[in-house]
Image (cartoon, rainbow, N blue to C red; front, side, top):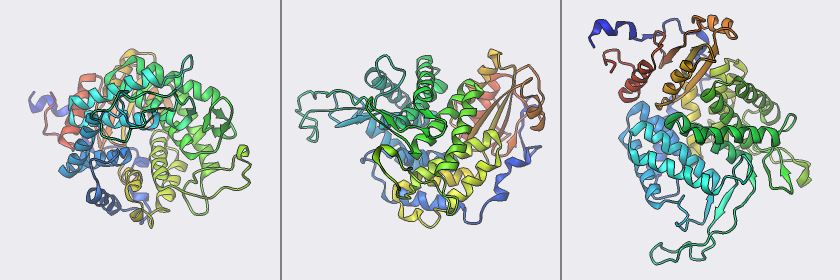
Length: 453
C-alpha cells in the first residue's frame, strides 16, 4: 500500500484529545518515573528464575519490556514462565503440595499476556492447560463458582520427583474465596478475549452472578469467604479484585451493569477502607464473627499498588475525578516505603507507571445490538496494550457523552483509538484495528511510516 493510501490512517499527537485525559499535568511532585526504574533495578538485581512465581513481578516486567524493550526484563519473564511450564505445578501428577485457585488464576493471566507479547505458542498451550486443570478439578458441582484448592497427600511431596509413586489427592477444599474467584473470572475472561473461548466466557459470567447474588452485601461489600458454616467480611482484596473482574466483564461484553456495580463497590471501598488522614487502603475491617472490636491498621504496599491500578481503570472509563484523587494520595503515601518492600513493590511500581502515563483509550460507538460493534471489540482485545481502557457507547443512549468526547453518535459501529497520546481517525474495519494495534505492539511506539498490512 502506498503512502497516499495510508494518509487517512496516520495518527496525530494531542489532536483534539479530551483535556481530562492529560493527567500528568496534575501529578504530585513525589510521583516520579525514577520510582519505576528503582523497582526494576531492585527486581533484576535479586530475581531468581527458579523461585516460585511472583506474578505481580512478571506483570511489572511485561509492561517495562513493552515500553523499553529491555532484554533483561524479557529474559526474566521467559525463563520464569518456561520453568513453570516444565514443572507443570498445575498437573495432577506433579507432587506440588497445594494447588490453589489463586496461583493458577494469576498464572493464566500472565501466560496469556506473555503469549500476546512474545507470540510463543508454548505460553498459549500452558495457559490452556491450566484452564483445563481448573475446569476439571476446582469448579464447584452444581454451583457457578470455583473451590479454593486441591492438596497432595503424598508424604514425599517435598522430595525429588524421580522415583516417587503417583501422588494421592485429598478431598477438595470447598471454601469459596471471593478474591480468588474474582481472579479466576478475570483469567477466564482474558482467555475469551484472546482465544475466543466461549466456555470460558460463560463460566466467568456465571461466577460473577453467583458472587453478586450470594457474596455481596450493599452495606459491607463483598464477603471474604463462605464454607457452609461461616462467612467473613471486610477484606480489601475481595473488593478490589471483584471491581477488577467487573471492569473486565464490562470491557468484554459491553454490559453497563457490570461497570455500574464496579463503581458502586469502588465508592464503598473508599468510604470503608481508605485512610483519609494519611492515605492508603487498610487491609481489613473488624468483623463480628471473630468478636473483634478493633483492627490493626495495616496497609499492604502490594494490595495498595493493585488498588491504584483498579481505580485508575475506573477513572479512565468513567472520568470521575474522585477516583483519580484517591490514586494520587494512595501512591504518594508509600513513596518512603517502596525501597524496603522487595518484590512486593512490583504492583506499586505498576501503579506508579500507570499514573505517570495516560491510559490508552479505545471508545467504541454504535448500536449496542449490532454484532459488528462486538467484532471491533474483539479485535481490540487481541493485543497486549498496557493501561488500556475501553468504553462501549450506544449511539442513542450515550449520545451526549459521545458528543462531549468529540465523536459522532452514529449507528454504524466505529472505534476511536487514542494510544500514547496519538489519536487515530475513526475505524470501522476490524482488520484496520488489528493492524493499528499490531504495529504499536511490535514497534513499541506510534510510527506513521510503518505501513498497514
